[in-house]
Length: 422
Image (cartoon, rainbow, N blue to C red):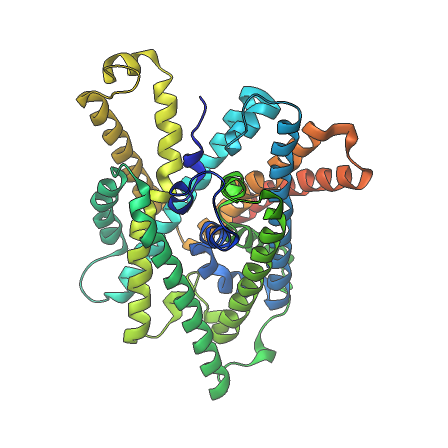
């Protein structure tokens, strides 16, 4: 199954013709793709690890993610120079070209799990923040999650995701506003003398907590599977590495600043979603409601790659094509019903998963430690080693082996420590 490149693209990318994106537009797409709800859990990660350990962890995660994104681009360029018949458009295509069918299955499975994890995080975030805004009305977290289900099912049936692009931008604007309000609150705490730098931990004495915080830091750098689509959207693709470096420098700096300020403001009272620490003022409530509204409309974007993979697999079955399609290009009424049903089942299943998650921070750490570490570090280094082989310098081989080993150990131990923490 050759997966369409749009399955790994945001609506902003989907609306662009191939290779027509300016540097400014590509920069915006990178920011929209990378920055997500995980940033609002960073102050909690700093509380767990300490402000110094947290800052170093975020910087290392950002630098490593950037390097591994470049490895994917190098691998595609290598395949193109070797005379491949068609360009690898998606992460799954790249896995297939390098490792065959097992590579595609592994890559697409990890992408599916990653996107499902992000979608569950959206539901957790929306439910907890709505409960915080509308306190005392008798609605519980479970009630808000189930209220989301019919809305998200309806949105998942929309054919063109480009119609939801403005809401994706709106959600990112709300993220920036939330970060600004947290920083403002931190300054207020410092001015009134309620925040003491000496009372904040630099490095936690319990080093067993560091993988937990590390998983949350890795989770913050979303959008790894969109690397190839982002690079393809540029007019001058040779400038992509430098543009990506500038974007990651800015994002990483803001992440460190935000996590540091949030932890300094609330200390040991820092919640796993820092917006829950905000006072009950109309400004804070407006930001929370705006974040929730934006994520309601960007939820279909998060599950779109999952729908693409699932429906693509269904298309491979002869009985599905025979009974649900009039011909190769036209779906029958029964076929459309089958598509709508599969998408509704997916949304309902994700909602049930969200209700089973004990806390946003725990879930973010689990996804970051497992799926995100494998898809962002282990697979790119493996592809690089497999494709370039003996042509690599000793230091390049050593770095790839370190990424594979450390990423795998981190995935195993991070998962263990998160489960034990639960």
